[in-house]
Amino acid sequence: MKKIFLLLILISISFCSFSQNFEKNTEKIKKIYVGNDFFVDYWVNAPDGMDISYFSRGSNVFALYNFPIKKSNFIFAIGAGLSSHNLYSNSYPGVSDEGKMIFNKISDIAVDEKDDYKLNKLNVTYLDFPLDIRLNTKKGFRYSIGIKGSLRLSDHTKYKGDDFK
Image (cartoon, rainbow, N blue to C red; front, side, top):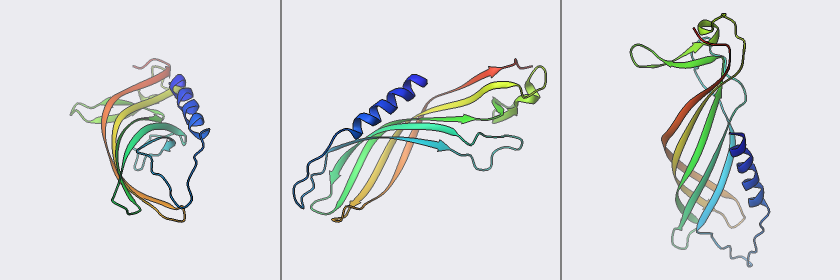
């Protein structure tokens, strides 16, 4: 994951190094827009006893294909992307007898019943499909609204600490 994170940082720096030339009052719209995001995930209504780290970081890489809407300032875009979400907490995921997802506090399932662990992370990777409508004003402001559907590609945990019961 560290190598992927470093690669994403290097890619984002390379995008910043390109410059653009614009003709007077005529801005050319690129057909393909490529971008990346770095973000922090927060959970609302987390299970009781679950302490979530305030810095559960994630990243996203995406490409959008632009379709200008006639001669207006509106652009419709469709694309694909890959996102990775991380959740750092004091609870380990599991499945209940009814088949529902549950989170067990590490102190409840650890052999020595202490919260003595170095790392506990849940990672989920998605393939994203965004749809976007953008407005580019003549004064340079850009407004956007869209929706994104996702398909879960993988999920796994990473735990470093004492053994479980």
